Image (cartoon, rainbow, N blue to C red; front, top):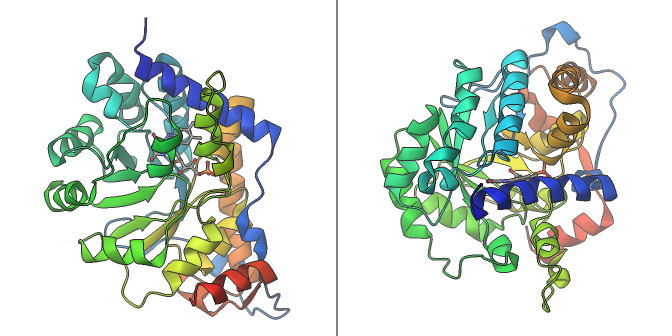
Length: 346
Ligand SMILES: Cc1cc2nc3c(=O)[nH]c(=O)nc-3n(C[C@H](O)[C@H](O)[C@H](O)COP(=O)(O)O)c2cc1C
């Protein structure tokens, strides 16, 4: 019999997939239109999408974002995701490992990712409510190359058994200063504003994942888990900043951490747009989960391989030999997004 915490992981998985099928998410990046150039003067063979970063030297600027582990079923998914990551050479994050700190039986549902992909770039994951000691433990558990510390206040509010205390900054500072690998502070899908990013930067955060709204929605997922209760949180379904809005928030800052983006990424064009708006690398969760459940590991490998090729072609389409050239790509924002930018004085 698995723990209640493990059961929650299965519920998240099932509900995320059910919501994905019910309502294929619309990426907020559709509100950004890139300007076509008929003469990019480039050869596709000259394009490199490799990221230049001392700590995150990914050959591919997108990766499998944190989702699974904690139960037998989600451990099996971690195994499949790790197989696909190994095959395609992309990075991967495991889901929150806090369950494995409480229940040793859950450890192998995370370590499987490292076992399958011994040389891959794998990120550990834990909530910001945990101590630096726990953070180091989850890093060592899977021999992680980096650690994601998730901040999920809106999810906790809607979650039936959610936390009540959100005093996280001291932990975050401690974790950044103590843990032996680079640390990314990551939202789970409600986005960030400029003030939060600045606060994190001033606390020593070098990497921040804006985790915007537009894809997997944890207000919906947790609310569905609540369905038999008297109280309902459906008024929070559109809470938070979208991925596009969060990227504009980050753009407005002169001094800032390296920005990662996640939330509603559906195709290689979304990845390109997120990079043009300032993301160094882009995480994909719900969509890759859907592909894995529907088409298995082989289907995910096939999709990632195509996306790698298509992203290279898209770089050529906008005349970019590397990510450095993406800052020069012209674009226009939808009226709604421009209005957001104006009102926020970004
Ligand atoms: C089933 C599922 C479980 C998730 N669990 C975690 C988690 O444990 N830790 C975390 O930081 N994010 C978690 N996430 C959030 C994703 O990493 C990502 O930030 C979010 O789903 C938005 O990306 P997407 O629209 O591509 O799904 C989970 C997402 C899904 C779909």
